[in-house]
Length: 311
Ligand SMILES: C[S@@+](CC[C@H](N)C(=O)[O-])C[C@H]1O[C@@H](n2cnc3c(N)ncnc32)[C@H](O)[C@@H]1O
Image (cartoon, rainbow, N blue to C red; front, top):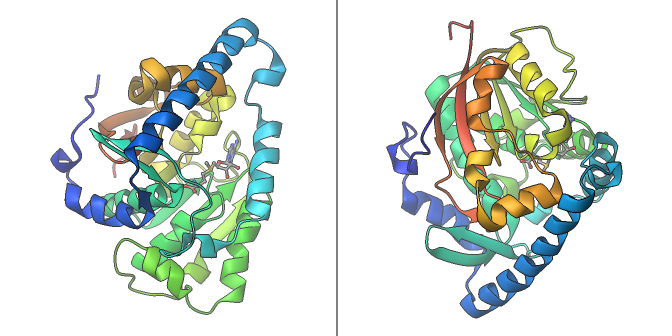
């Protein structure tokens, strides 16, 4: 079994202070409010958890593909990428934790931190073709393209609305808008490269790509939504990758006990283990949960090598 490593022990060269700097613009510190909201949420999760334990077999309480498509279709229909501005008023603050540090923060801070992990992993692996499965509104790839203009990026999402929102950014701007350039955690080398990313609609259980079409396949809080189809999705990731998969997802090792475990069960989020990956043809190389995390749903960043590939 692969251990969860401290961030600074990974071959990514990321420091704690670098993460703190990126996350800080999205943070509000109010410890009393944090504790109050945590207690309230804990009670609610207990109720949801017990209900699921009693009625979990019922289709209405399962996170099925049609419901996910509806939820995210609505979310991406109204997305405005200006909400990633460093000075945008946060839509809402949620409960975050990193070791003993507690904060109320907007989820944009998490996106920015995860982007740094993606950048450093790509620098390490130097892929030529990268696919993001469950790319949502395209935020990760729009930024990565500017840092790595020589890489061919493709994003695929279950919804029509996510890729459409990403394409709107491409069509309405010649250069990546300044608020997105400022949001990027590292300097961009080509602010026009975002226009070359391909965004399309498609299902993770039947990726419309030939075997080994990409050197690296990434997922960011997307498998999270795929508990009911997780085996097919993981098999597909391994099939289309000619090298590695990098997944930042709530694997079970990250939410093994306590309130996080109850939340995952209550909401029917991903329950796959990092140690399940070899069943899908992927060998985990390293994993970490050492980053700012939502208090109830923690993600593990996992790099896996796809079996039978030489990269
Ligand atoms: C929480 S969002 C994450 C979006 C993006 N990766 C990010 O980091 O902002 C989850 C995304 O996964 C997508 N998704 C869920 N099930 C999917 C499936 N079966 N195939 C492709 N995408 C899926 C959803 O449509 C949604 O856009």
